[in-house]
Length: 194
Image (tube, rainbow, N blue to C red; front, side):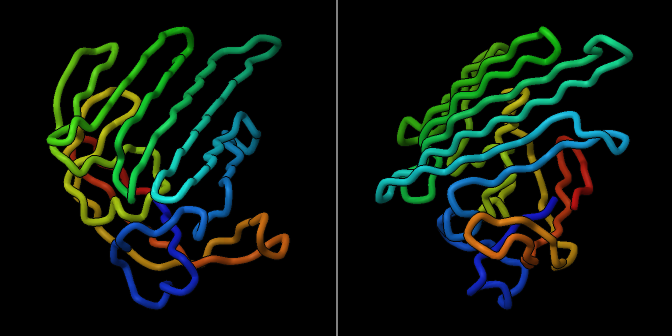
């Protein structure tokens, strides 16, 4: 998994930054094309809207895999997260996994998070970061809210390296390089991503 850092803090190493505005990192949105076997099969888009200490993050992820002349698999994910001063206050997510729906509502009641989903109800300690993969403050956390299952996953997030990543940014020249943290996330589900 790669997490970007703001330009002015890139030389400081692989550490979490307290409440860095995602708009400083990404602009108003980040967008990715999703490929499978060299063919574009979908997209992932994250949009940021802020008003003072309030931040709204809308995430959309869709893939469609065709086989011959029909769609063999379809996946759609949508979430809206509300943040106040860098802390998650509420998250709603909806998933359609090839016709199987899933819904998640998580809200901070001031003491803990109440998590209600298609799978049941639970609670989690604060702070809580969702598995939306844009927030560099997740570095150093030991739990994340899996927005695909509604479960709180225990994790260890380990820095691996700092790498240059080629990207297209709306507020930069057409193609530019940023320095990003390449990390390994392990725990309830182990995954080396970068």
